[in-house]
Image (cartoon, rainbow, N blue to C red; front, top):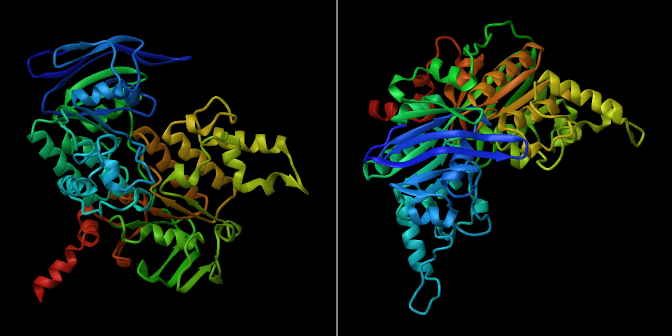
Length: 507
């Protein structure tokens, strides 16, 4: 472990035990002032436990933290903030019923001479901070009315609203478009230039290579290695993360596809999407690319009955259908894995068994009685089929890793035997090993005849899995690509609107 005058923080023999689990095992770690230090590892590797100890949220079972040369045997969140340590957690911690400015200054509201909160000053200062993160969000907007990506920007603004020395960012880009990620990286570089040290946790290795100086790998609670990022190949990182040689998954997207299963014709929802027409066939994976707000998820919501179009037709097996609700969609053998699995896809305090069978109780029912034995057999079958890592189908879902939670939602829809499956950001927030498993699962489901609509902000993911890719911008489908020698640049050219600028220049 390196120590010099440029060391901001050190962890010495840091361990953390939970009942039955050694979450951290004698971790020794050094962080230099002014560096962007990436931390990678699969879910359950110890990353979150480690940063929560640095942030004073958890106390180590043994070992200690040294910050700017001072040993800290006990640290709480308030003390951590006073030292200049700020964490942006993977899960949002904003107060939904408060507005943007109130969240940014939560616990430190500016007040006037008589001690009353100075709302004018607070909104003015909040606007300045938001401008630093490239956002024009209205400071008086309630958090509950913002999109997921807007909420993340508010969290970043809150984190830098004080004199921060160490900023810890846990999966900060999971809800961002490519354009928003580039904007975030610009913020990170400016913070680094101003002397802020950053710990950056991400499952996306491309982001690690783009933004970090050094990278540390965690596995099974142990620190495996720390290496300059430029010396770490993707193969090395993945092998260190999973503990064995790892082969990147390759899709068999050149397989033969079947008859048309789903078609949308001239679908329009005023102010959201317009003139949407495309089809999907058996065994085909069709991708939807585009920036956040381009209308991708709105198309998914129309197909699944969560959004009623003003006009247009939906056809299944070339027959027009009316889908007024998710229940109608389920009856037509349509499944939807939502962008926010914890908000819309899972019952976190219910068991794996309850989550899998929730939408399929009629499968196990006779008259008004549920066949509990059959329910257990089917749920165990899917737990084994999808390799859901848990003690049993009776385990509470909120205690599973992100990748295993995602598999539970998959199991629910597979039990329903969907003809059409809509996957909205299916790999958000899951680790590289779980992603590869998810890609294989998507491909296997497609091979069995399911028509899949895949929405993803990761262009490489779309290129790796899809037969065709539709690019959306401002509610329209602006380009369709057959996936043959397709590049990220071609998709970005249309999703970011560069083709519009080209036309303007020609004119």
